[in-house]
View 1 (cartoon, helix red, strand yellow):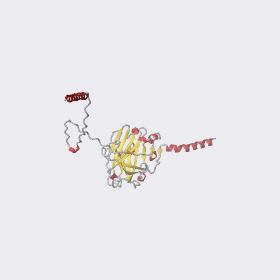
View 2 (cartoon, helix red, strand yellow; view 1 turned 90 degrees about the horizontal axis):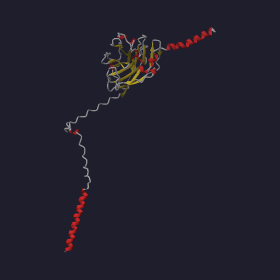
View 3 (cartoon, rainbow, N blue to C red; view 1 turned 30 degrees about the horizontal axis):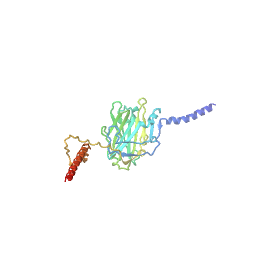
View 4 (spheres, rainbow, N blue to C red; view 1 turned 60 degrees about the vertical axis):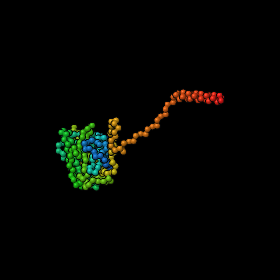
Length: 318
């Protein structure tokens, strides 16, 4: 009987142990993520807000992410909620624009070393040429101190294919905004920081991002990574592949011009050809019918009868 109980305990342990191991890690399912990015006819204002006509949200599936919870797994449901991390992208001739929006529930960052911001709340973005592999990528990070409010940024790797290094300047090409229970990280990445030149519609490049959460009470980092190739080994070949389209994001309709005020003077001003012609005048309405015509007809009839009688009398007297 004891051997049987021991065997049952061993079998139960084998069944439970894989569940316990996987409770704090959800692996990426889609290893070949292919998305597109549309052109922004109006460049976004880099202020941490989602400009409706300058961004489009990535339509990502649950299998496009890996989730990691270094605590006891109690935050896994929070991490897997698609509303907790949203990514918006667009492009123009000069830049690739990214805005990452996350739930601020577990926003906490007391680090003052920019090179270590990956350890608490913040974001990492990696971009590379479409055929890049290994560590050939531009990798950058943004964070905001929850203690002082200071902004921090770091470049862990400059793009080897770009002729220019990236200079991140908050208030110009980067912004962080906490508003409405969310914290947004926005950045404009020049093409020439990771590509030889700006790409054309139809060309492809690599893209990866990591969103970090840090529950203050747990002191354990939790991450959501889109695609692979950064958190668990630097390999640009595993990045999501982004193809530029010819599609243009909706342009705001221009405001209607104000109508000039009419001062009653009748003076139009400007080009006479621009003055609208006067409307055609309607034909005058017929005079209303009254009883005066009946009286006039009766008088004329009496006069005619009298004249006829006089003529007849003169004829008879002859």
